[in-house]
Amino acid sequence: MRLKEFQSRLRKEDIDVAIFISPDPNIFYFSQVDMLSFACLIVPAAKEPVLITSMLDYERSSKEFKTVKNVLTLKRKKLSEFLADYLKKIKHGVIGINKTALSLYVFSKLRKALKGRFVDISEMCSELRAEKTYTEINYLRHAAKITDGVMKLVLDNFNMFKTENEVEAELNYLAKKQFADRSFKAIVASGRNSSMPHHMTKNRPLQKGFCLIDFGVKYKGYCSDITRMVFIGRPSEKEQKIYDLVRKVQENAIKNIKVGIEGAKLFSAAKEDLGKYGENFIHGLGHGIGVEIHEAPNLSDLSKDVLKKNMIFTIEPGIYFPNRLGIRIEDMVLLGERTAVLTRTPKGLRRV
Image (cartoon, rainbow, N blue to C red; front, side, top):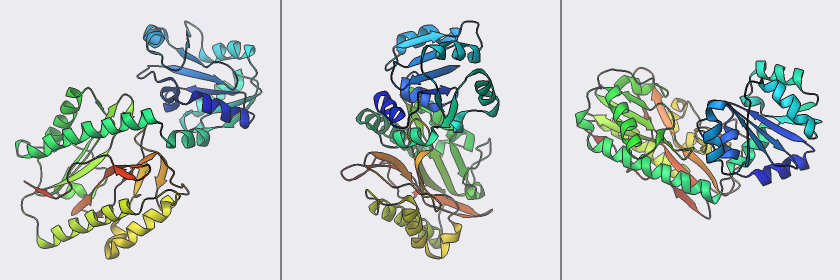
């Protein structure tokens, strides 16, 4: 996506070449070729990048490339042998790798095959991807729009579902109808299951009480994420008040967003706004979103990230009472000239 800028950063850091190996998300980010069974992207600091694929993906990659013009195939060579031969043609005294996406096994093979000093460029890539381009913003806007449409249809027809699995299946089906894939396995957690932030949706009857629906799609390789709540039955006055509090805290957190604020500061303010329920807020306030569902910036108590223009991230406070209930409200937010909420599904508590 931003190869020239990345290569400029490599030169600035005196890194001769960067190597990305599947399943590294930076391969898609820089090449814009998606769903490869295997790929390796070589990005020299001063020469044209090269995308290496298996024979299975070679023809498609050659036709679909958008930013990388040189596409090669391993044929019957091992990757380590291919890289050793190819890098003889270019300077590679310092080799950049993404340690967050490289297994110890593959790294040991690289060290054995290549002569050079390896340096970690994971933070460099993370910082680059955190600030979205105009094209990325449009993709993410559209992903959010699809998500809103799917969520609205599911909420409007919620009475037709009998199990958590049925809700999840409908979410995935409607996303496919809009030419989008799911960005993660949807969470449909009803009744006591809602107390688990990462409940595994299963073939269980929908239970009375709060039902948490956390869902997102992937459009042109870019993810969306939203969480809305449904109440099955009639909420008590206390349950409604707790829901209204979480909604107010979420809306206040969005109002507090500005360029230069620290993610940890936003988190602390939201936790303080929850008052006596602050200890029931057991996860971060939000996360960056792009080619991965979770990327920079991080909005947690331990975060050192500072918000910058053109970042897109979620705001999702939640409170959880073990084996009783959980409430989370989540939206995607763009920090531009002003803050824009990309997911627009109404946040009032839907009763069914």
